[in-house]
Image 1 (cartoon, one colour):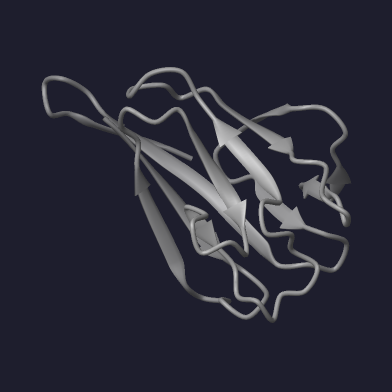
Image 2 (image 1 turned 180 degrees about the vertical axis):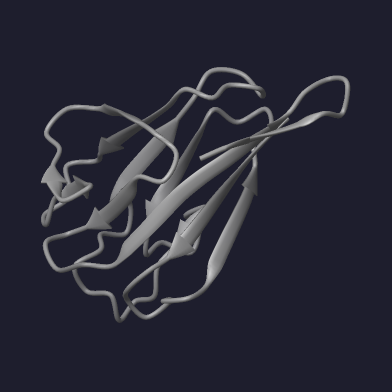
Length: 120
């Protein structure tokens, strides 16, 4: 099983951490919607309700892909605006909107023998 860790670097949730355990779902939404897995404060006005999506294949996947969901203010990875889905690497910084909040993403995978492999 894999676990994603999102460290909020800037914005109204700065210094907070979200942990997501990957399971049967193969995507998670970043945005201001209360249903978003990575939820941003409504005061982070540059963030759309359903701003971006992270997807993967299978519970033990280490291949994560980030896609902008046609947001008004764009999605950035390590300071670069993305226009097509991009593969994430551990430690990448995702920014929702120019001058919007930033989160750093890292993950770990727990193998079937209960060995933990830290990535990033």
